[in-house]
Length: 447
Image 1 (cartoon, helix red, strand yellow):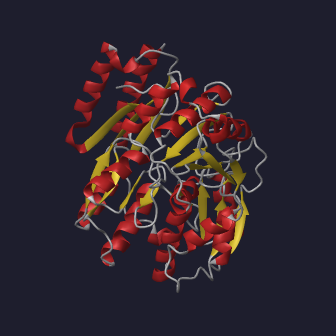
Image 2 (cartoon, helix red, strand yellow; image 1 turned 90 degrees about the vertical axis):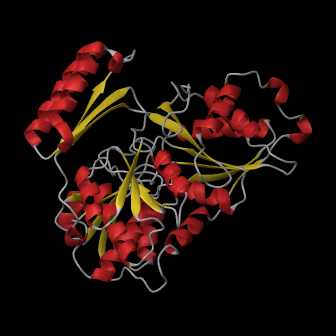
Image 3 (cartoon, helix red, strand yellow; image 1 turned 45 degrees about the horizontal axis):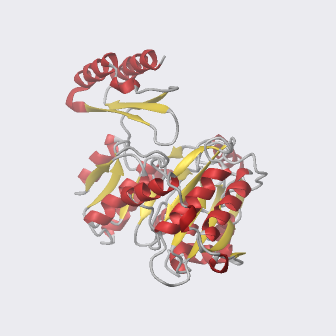
């Protein structure tokens, strides 16, 4: 069944366009009703990133939750993984993160976590959607049963301590010069502080949010500023988070960007050596490079692939007992510590490997040579271009040209009206030609 509001990562869209106060109010009411289980006093924690629209959405959500009798604990600007952690820590019935992650400031979104700190499954999202479109008036609380709201202090300190405890106590970052780019987002306070407390010489950029500049020319989707700063300050490593800090990319001391596939390879190799992997393999998505799959195979490990979206990676991990997974984009999930992607925790795990091996980041993080991989996006207004006969024919022809030595992935984005066309293989020229062929067909159909 197609979902009306939820995409691959919560509800997302243009603030005050798609994500309106009316919708946020209904989401609060619907989610609050779905998660009222038992006779206890129910509570929800709400965090947000640094977008201007966060104030509007937060206020509307509070009204929705309190109108169905849920108490609200407001966390302020914190990373998405902090919301997941605090939902469990504070014994809340529900957790909410107001964020559009790596999207520009004009967008915003609502991510929901269950009492276990995990993102909701499709079944529960369908239940919430059904209530959003229903008349909930008769299910609102009476005057004496309305919820209360209050702000929680020391949230940052709690998360910093949690992140530090994912490392053995003897691990220190002394001697490392680290540039951290917080994308003017949710981690602008906690990430530099955590690294400093662990002993690193910290240079922070992207730490001056003004409500409009989240992800603008900074962060994991725009690493050029971090590359320049690493080179200028002769740093040992650069860490780029995105707007809600659930993903991370690394820049080595030479200024080269290291993506999520290489990070998973580093951690997988380290954890295999330490016998920490709960299954002999890693979970990633269909977008991860074939080079990662071949490298893991050389270690005797497998790569299980899922649909795009860290929630699907995590679902597969939970179902089959894996403790390491992630996405090429930098969502790294380490279920020994977290219930969702955590950019800061992933960076700390990498830094611990770097310290233990006493080798440059460029050597530690170059596990394999990625196969040529081309990704292009085609924006469309409406309809289903992928169902057009001309597009179906172009896709089939492209697959035949690639043969067994490559992969072709075409999928609509779950967060914006875009169709993503990706191909990879040993022959860059062939891969490029194949992508261009499919993109041309999709572009014509979309027009």
